[in-house]
Amino acid sequence: MLASLPRQVNENVLVGFDTADDAGVYRLTPECALVQTVDFFTPIVDDPYTFGAIAAANALSDVYAMGGAPLTALSIVAYPATGDLDDLEQILKGGAGKMQEAGCVILGGHSVADDEIKFGYAVTGCVHPERVWTNAGARPGDALVFTKRIGTGVVSTALKRDLAREDDVRASIDSMLELNRPACQAMCGFETHGCTDVSGFGLLGHAREMAVASRVTLEVEVAAIRFLPGAVDYARAGALPGGLKNNREFVSPWVDTPAGIAAEIENLLYDPQTSGGLLISLAEEDAAALMRLLESVYRVGRVVPAQAKPIQLI
Image (tube, rainbow, N blue to C red; front, side):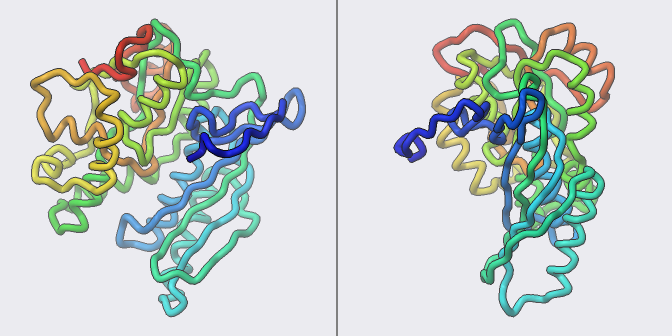
């Protein structure tokens, strides 16, 4: 569908929608570019304040994935006309608190009456035009590292089905509330080649986008992937969100999958994440230094020259 849209040529557009990147980047001056993104979704937790905070962290993550610093935000609200206004107030307060933590100013927003609750933000940040991280910069020989554990979609589905343990839900919420700002700031000290925010298309969906944009193949070490507490159990029990099934249907033809991977583990690689981690491509020595600097960062694979398929599971 996007391919059918008329092309807009502008020399100041540094990153558009061509490579399915996390945000758009528009150069204002030789030393300043805008980073712009938008994201909103339906509630994934019961507590309205927490939902608002997660929605904010999720929207901010796209700016961090580009190497930017968030500046301003506009809220997007869809809420039932007869809904509980106290709950709406808590959603807005949760989002505002997380934005304040990020140093991002909410300038306003827009709301519509809708029977289904949706909430999120359009976020604007800034970045130096020569220091933009994109999903198209991965190089053969690079290490692949990741900043969070995966499994938020499966845990949220288990919660909806009353299967989830309280401690597992808490761990998933804590992960979704965690800003990717520390990782972004740490990465600024290294030559980051490629970066993408792992969210709704799952780890392999976003890895595929990076591989295709960079014209390389990503080797993903399945045994290295870290999962949220309970995620493997819930996946084994069949608590698979609809988005996971859609991701797998679309992405799996692009993935070289060896025999012997447990079904629950393979499913989790397609699990849609909310406020997920950053998948980063950088030189081996820089990857090792980044992992020493941040305990949450861990190696998940490497970049190799393009093969028959953009993703190889090993």
